[in-house]
Image: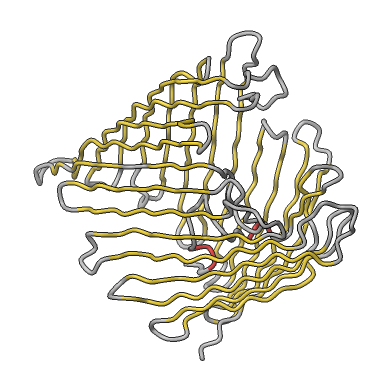
Length: 414
């Protein structure tokens, strides 16, 4: 696992590598790609107990977006039999920003994560605390979270909670929401079928997520009651009854088509049913699918998403992702048919040369994207990557932007 990306959670992440190479234009109020001048990363084990990661990247100025320097330091220490404690420091520093632009000269995050894994593997979890530092001396610049799972043969229970301050800014990370407290408990039961049955294990479960705003109170919840069936051929079937509540603080158009938005200061409660199936992923032809039908804000939504894959070992793996959504809202609000499809081709020419091509069409964003990555493994755990990406308006194929990026990694066995 990449050491830098292991801190926090997938939605409270102090470091997200895709932030490097993009910048916010204060004049046009848009996020744009910016050139990366150079950078270096060192990541590996110091011994059986210590891991270290160091990285520094420099971007160039583009129009009204100044140059930035990014530095990351991560250190992890193994404790007890299977647990570890990690420290991370992230620094984003402005280089020669004009005084006319309201840009923070720096943004820093210091964090500690304790990853829990008991010797018998009954207990697993994580506790973390991250603190941000900005030029302004303000409060609530923190993020905290905890999760703990206990699993035995017949059941499992899990507790999750997160608390994110209103002013927590991790400009080099991924934190889409601030100023909230949420809990997400889970519980499952497992029943085992007779040896000759096609079913291996089945049972019910419940998952929930509830959000509170410190000043407002409860704002959102998601409750799911499901039943899982795992077959002996390694396929899986799940049926889910879902209830969701969302309070809109601002106007919102669910179709994102610039149509009449749903009004602000309104609460929506809606329910739906879902059916999810995943085939045996060891087979030559694989399939994952999810069908959803039910209410959506003040209307209805019908969705179908999934993946169809073909494995031609050892030379190629071909797959296609698709996502179809029919949103039907009453007048004067908009209805829309949203479509996303993305073929992916992975080719293996030898034990050291690989080529991956990903194509995606997104009707909502009116975007057609091509992304191709060439990989040459010239030494153990050492690679040369060359990535080409191109974006077009899907409606008329006018060009948006394109880029080519090279990355070199080398493993030092000291």
